Image 1 (cartoon, one colour):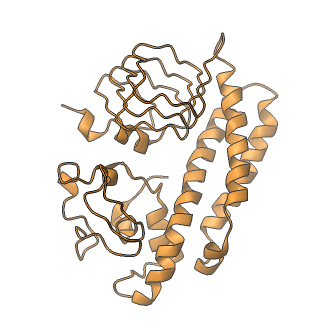
Image 2: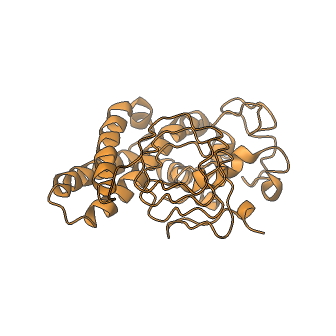
Length: 269
């Protein structure tokens, strides 16, 4: 579920709105091209987005939805050469992103349950496979069907399965696990904390100090890691961690990550 910007018609730069803030230097309504977008669908300030007041762009991840809409749903017809596609394309993109995000989480959950020898994992694994197949089929749907699709029931179903997966995996960690689900931990001082197996789903960790913390097998789905200090932290085996979350945080080369993720450029010397 990786974004391939070269195969996308810059949908995140056009279809989505920007609100002037610390993340974006300007306001931009949905469906209007960003002022920095070039004719070749490339960003004119890509190498200096953070310095130009657009750090929000550097942490956005479409999970591959952009190229799916551009090359599959609309069969390579871009909205500049075929302006009649623009409205439908921009309408479908946010929905496709949600579908691809679900695929990302479901794929990770499947891998996690496959590694569990517990009999209790088998029913969850079967349900995950079914949900993955259903979600994948929707990514292949026609534009009109996608526009009319109510994704909320599917999201609820997937969320239940991801929570069951999380509970099964975190049960392997001995002792009492910390439950900070949805907690306000903004600015919290958690340097060096043992958070193995912790439930941090949807937690607000903005500007929290997690330097040197042990977050192995912690559930981080939906956790807000903006400006979170992850220097020297151990995030190996962290559950449902995304590249976008890392991009929003602060870290260093000593921050240990799952093999599927990489150190953001601004973490490196």
